[in-house]
Image (cartoon, rainbow, N blue to C red):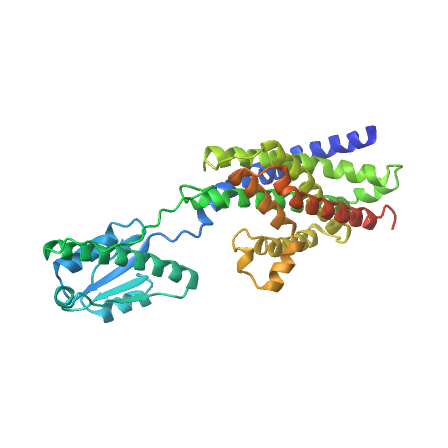
Length: 373
C-alpha cells in the first residue's frame, strides 16, 4: 500500500510540476466546452433569403414581412430579376430565392389561388430540408391569414375549421440545442483527456529510460499500474466536476437526476478509458505513436457515439458496430440522468455494459504489460 501511495504522490508531483500539462488538463477543457457548445449545433438560423417581387402589391409585401418577422431568416436586398438573384446564390450570398410572380395579388383575389417559386441551395441536404420546412410553415400561415381576411371582407362569416395541434415539449421545453449538446460534449472532453494522458504516460517513461529502472525494482505489476493510472482517474472526476458547474452556470443545463449516480457511472467509465490507454501505451514506443493510435480510435468513437448524428439514422451495420463503442453508453447515460431524471434501474443496462467493457479491457491491458523484455 505504501508503494502505491508513493507512486501516486510521485505522479501528482510530476503532473503539477509541468505547467504545460496543467494548461492541458484544466484550461483547455474549459475553453473547449465553452466554444464547442456554442459551435456544435444543428439549429439552422440566420438563413439568407432573397425575394424577387415581380408584383409589388400589398399582398406580396405582407408575405415578405412575414419572413422578416421570423428570427430564423435574414432578408437580403431584393432583386427584380431572378437571374441576378441566382448569381447571388452562386456567390454564396443567399440561401433561398423566393420568386413572387406578376399578378400575384390579382390571382389571389380572382382565382383564390396562385403559386410562387422557391429555390433552395441544397449543397447541404440536411440544412436545405430544414429551410424548406421553415419556408413552408410561414407560407401556410400566410395562406391561412389570407383566407380568413377574404371571408371577412366578402361577408362570408364562416371560418374554415382547422385541426390545431398543441405540442408539449418534455425535457427541453425551450428547444435549446445546447441543452442537448453540452452533456455529450462534456463526455467527449472527459474521454479525450483521460485517454490521451493515460496512453502517453507509460510511453513517456519508456522514452526517458525510467521504465527499465522501475522494472528491475521489487515493485509489483499491479502496484505500478494502479499508481500510474489513479491520478488520471482523479483528474477525470475533477474535469467532470468543472464541466458540470459550467454546464449549469453558463448553459443552464437541467440536472434532474441524481448527481451521485453520474459520479458513480463516471468512476467505472474512467476505469475503462484508462485501461484502454494503458493497453495502447503497452504496444507503442513513442508518445507520437500513442497519440496517433488514441486519436484514430477517438475519431471513430466520436462519430459513432450518437453525439452529433443519431444512431437511429445510421445503416443497420453501423448501428450494430456502435454497440462496441463505450462513448455511446456514456452519452446516452448522461443525457438520460441530467435531462430526463432517469434513476438507477433505467440506466442499469448501460452501467452493466460499461462495467463489462472495463473488466475486459483492463484485463487485456494488465496481461499485455510486461515488467521484463
